[in-house]
Image 1 (tube, rainbow over the protein chains, first blue to last red):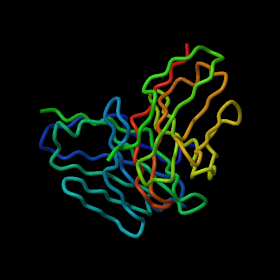
Image 2: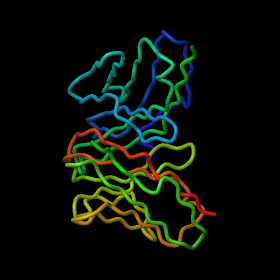
Image 3: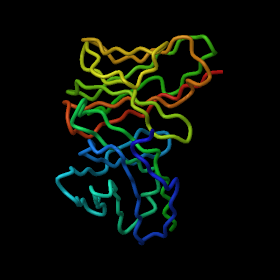
Length: 114
Length: 114
């Protein structure tokens, strides 16, 4: 049973436009969410996070939105740049039993075309 | 300030051999996580360790897999009697404390079982 789902394996957008990556979760115990970016042959790197007490968190070109009632979050990148082309992972964690353990989705490959 | 160091980057083993994957966390980090990524899938949690303690091993296969994080030296993920299905990328991550921390990932070890 996959508790974090990224239903779009891939997304292609034009440079300068908005990229929207989606993530759904099923475990109502999840209350902290993170996005990671991964380039080939490298490990994931942290991008942005959001606590369940918020519905939006913004950092530069990156904004994460959380809809708790729908158990849905999204990552918006605007404007998109070719260097943003990577695999994006959504991750979620619950306070118990292990607050440090994150459950990851399968990732969405973003391609930004010049 | 060195990041999370994993070695080797690539490891080739024949079926039945042992694989040892090493991870040195970032300086000052005492929490280590191991994740496995199978082809076309996301990162699956395996084990969470602190110095000399296994905190959560709920993602570890029951047989052939073990992990340790000794008082001195790197964390070791050990796979005995490897099978082809063990072929995957193994990522180590660290954090300075337990909780809602972003994880710092190494570049991973790509294990190939012939």
